[in-house]
Image (tube, rainbow, N blue to C red; front, side, top):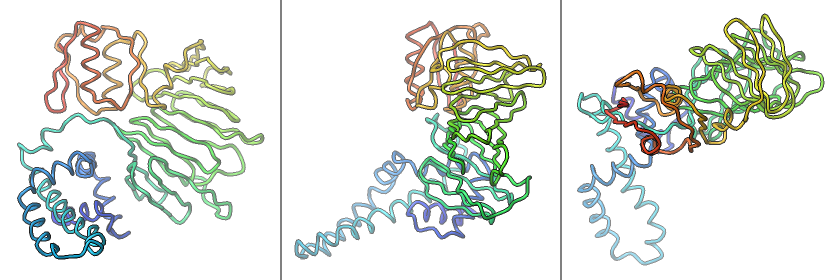
Length: 383
């Protein structure tokens, strides 16, 4: 698509006047790159829209208002009241459309706002690859119903719901894949009633429909599972390091590809963690750690430290600065540079709200320890 077509689709989506076919084309463009999604989110942000109307269209706004005022000055009070919604639409919609096009026309310039991308707080976003191969981008403020012929998925706000259908028989190799990009999170509710909270840079592969046997999903990244209890069917989470089998329980799983260990932290119920070389059943308050050789070590932990992210907090207990920055990078989507290697080993203990601006977190850390942060575009420099 050329820039003009993209502008029109973005504007229609902004005004909620987009057709199903146009939404499909927009979803394809959004799924093509992270920069496309970042641009779309920025255009839809409240701060940008206020600024666009206030700064870039001030003269046009005044001209339109004066003209409307002249046309309606003799209108009776009751008529004027009924006219106000239409007046607002006449004023605001063209201004926003112009702001979107102004922004996109400038976004490709080397000195544009896009090139100087700010560090933003993460939010609800996901990309779903359907069993047909079609990719759909989801955002926390969208309501969308997707049907690939085998299953129906309904997205409402920040939750993707897999709808149950007992009448359709599907092949064993039919899956839907949910991917959470850097700076994202999402909630997925499976057809059996199980709820999965997915953290940044995670991937969940789910059968189009669970069969009569075990309920099996495949996972990488970080998630919190609240599994619906069923007496006759286990729920199994498969990872590249171990399988986690349960009947009904709540637990956290962390198994990022670049990290050497899998962590399973149990909140309620019981789970069985099984690797190629070992197997353990753990109880609430325990954590099973599986290393790259499949060895399992169980210990008692403060579970809040490992699952607080699901409730909007990030907890660090005597954590290395490098590990803290790695965690913040996933959520705020920035790059980091250390002026000296020794900085990586400074330790912090903090309990912070994950929806704070990252600058507030840096200021707090500067007060705790002798370290300074400077931000250049999307890069954080530590000194």
